[in-house]
Length: 208
Image (cartoon, rainbow, N blue to C red; front, side, top):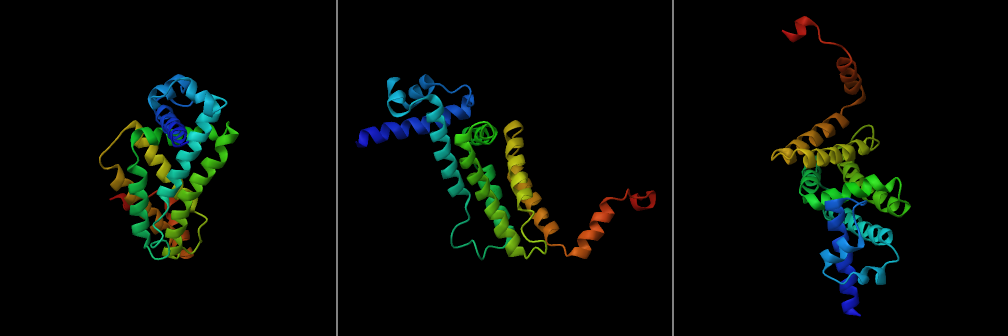
């Protein structure tokens, strides 16, 4: 029984690696079993199709990713916003390339693959939870309605890092998240004033 469980787990882990390298469309039974170092027939023994294998592997992977993104239990209610931003930036940018690619594959394929939708939504919800914690800690006057913007910022930086990797990406993401927190805690009058200022083209005298 233990050997069977080990083989199944090896297939799931291998599937995530192959998806990260080849994408969902390029993942086959042969590629997964070769990576897992098990006979080709093993995949068919545990899973009815390659789609089932991929869906289960990615669901388990994203569930683990959600757990990794959660703030440490003893810091959820007392972490200052800057610490929350630093934690998130390190978690987003610290993910190795293959797993980052697999994660984006989940997000991209969730729209057309029902088996992945719950996993993708749960993962994004875990990303949003840390932003809610930071906004609550900051006492944002508009509440936590802007939490999705923090998620989008992190996902965008992660995607850019895949295309053009820079050593400064973690620091830049932290700075951008910090600035977004600053914007979120402006009182209504300050927010209105800055909204109006940004909507106005600076005059020549302002530029001098």
